[in-house]
Amino acid sequence: NAGVTQTPKFQVLKTGQSMTLQCAQDMNHEYMSWYRQDPGMGLRLIHYSVGAGITDQGEVPNGYNVSRSTTEDFPLRLLSAAPSQTSVYFCASSYLPTGGNSPLHFGNGTRLTVT
Amino acid sequence: AQKVTQAQTEISVVEKEDVTLDCVYETRDTTYYLFWYKQPPSGELVFLIRRNSFDEQNEISGRYSWNFQKSTSSFNFTITASQVVDSAVYFCALSEALGAGNMLTFGGGTRLMVKP
Image 1 (cartoon, helix red, strand yellow):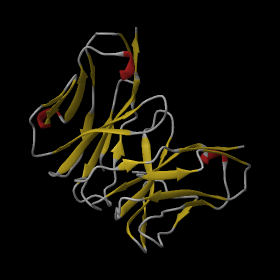
Image 2: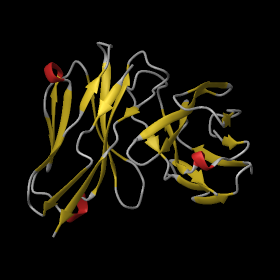
Image 3: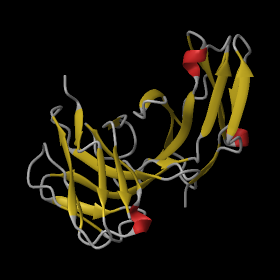
């Protein structure tokens, strides 16, 4: 019963560095997504995927890349980290890809600081 | 575009008081889904409830109850006889039926502090 697993839990980067936030789910969910949480702004969608090989942009995609080579994994890449990307990142998955008729299951988050 | 507003950024109550968290939403869709999530100090997001736009029945689950009113575009959350363990940030969220792949639009959250 692992659910949605995110690694690492904490990360500090210097401006310009690159890194990948990992997300894996073991529930055979087709839909996976990445959100960032900033104070007073709730969570905002970065990228999402409705199935292996299919990704699309969300509300705040700039500075982030994703790929979905398997159903289980949905990594988020920061190619050149900027201080504005300091945030808490959440990965989420659901069984159904559309319409909100299937609740999202969230990982425990990754707290990223860019100095 | 869809929008969720949680006007109360922070609420402080004393244990056993009742408290209502407000949520107002905007959407052009006739079919949509509303959610509440809880984020305790440990940081994870806990799903509390989902309602679809065609079901305006109020729901009660233990000390929690939800009041969905389409006429005022509101989906308010009430905790009866609050407890210290209810201290958390609570998020209201909206998903449109034809929206971008299960995208949730979140409100800014309400931080609830329950004092003993």
